[in-house]
Amino acid sequence: MLPQEIIRKKRDRRELTDEEIAFFVNGVTDGSIADCQIGAFTMAVLLNGFSEAETTALTLKMRNSGSVLQWPELDAPVVDKHSSGGVGDKVSLMLAPMLAAAGVYVPMISGRGLGHTGGTLDKFDSIPGYQTQPDNDLFRATVKEVGCAVIGQTGSLAPADKKIYAVRDVCATVESIPLITASILSKKLAAGLDCLIMDLKFGNGAFMNNLEDGRALARSIVKVANRTGTKTQALLTDMNQVLGTAAGNAVEMQEAVDYLKGQPADPRLHEVTMRLAARLLTISGQFSAETDALKRLERDLASGKALETFARMIAKLGGPADFTDHPAKYLPQAPVIRPVFPHDAGYVESMNTRNIGLSIIGLKGGRTTPGQTIDYSTGYTGFCQIGDYVDSQTPLAFVHAANQEDFARAAAELQNNVTVSDRKPQSAPVIAETVE
Ligand code: URA
Image: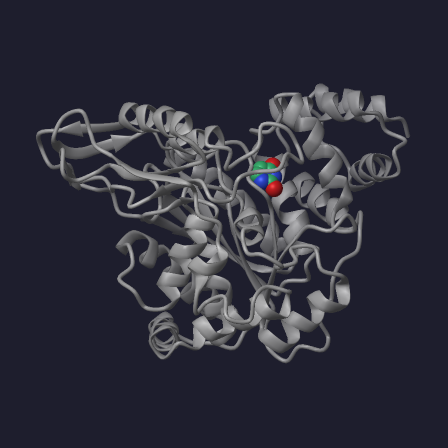
């Protein structure tokens, strides 16, 4: 077999066999296929599409390109949630310990910020001492003893995705539904999951701008994951506004701790978190009805069990033992924290969520080059929601910045990216649809 013949076949809109896809992925993994061939292959897939069978084969070959975890020592379902990426999306921080408190196991392998979206891993890196890259023994021991461990991807999990992703990033081939499906699922399935829930975001702060594209990606992921034997469903959730009230790294960690302590939560954030968790607990068979799962999640939040699970996970992975008692003592604080008011009083009508995500990179809370060191302390708190009234006394948000210059730039960006009107708009429901 020759790589160029496989590329040619897809270029000519013909269906590839399992063997051809396996040959290509093996060549990517062992380095015998060049980056230019990966670029041409992914462009052919983007332009001409992949059948469900081809997407499933690509996913499985990419999953098998590295180690695939197994959990014979665990006595309850192994589950996870994956978000397609958003702004202010700290759901994983609360959801992992809530699920573990409810009796399932969550080996959560997370990523860093991508484009304008924040990354779960960067949020955990804001906790001093917390190891996002523990060795395999510590990772497994944490999952077994605590019930959850949120860590970063190791080099041994789905290495083919790492290479293909890096080429797609610079060859304009990210926005392909089969390629996104295989990329996300190869990593998730390598973690040895029984069940998965996808938080598929759509809107101006998501990679899928509209509901229709979000639905197509959700259906592709759900179909392929179920074909591979991992029970999977997806919720399509609205990302036309910042989720919750904080956006950044340490500031989102603080919001997550407050949530787990039972402090009044942003209703949209609460709804997404509870519904994703309850759905997962139901599809895993841990609860027979979603209403029972919801009651259990509420109970574990009220009793502090979910908070205690979070605290134990942090301590076991090297963070401070009393982190959840005094998060402000440990999380970095920006030197400049100031409110930003709208030019005109009125109701928040819309926001350009993508630009708000990008402005966090401008505050050095995200990267412009791979591996760059970031400032965990920066971002926004008290972020307004669509329908809120704002005026010269009620801010759009508080900016957390490293200096006055960064503050001034972020303040102007905030004012430009939030639209205020005289009439109170209807806020869209945060959950649009479920894909089963
Ligand atoms: N996230 C991934 O892991 N892969 C993609 O292709 C897109 C988003």
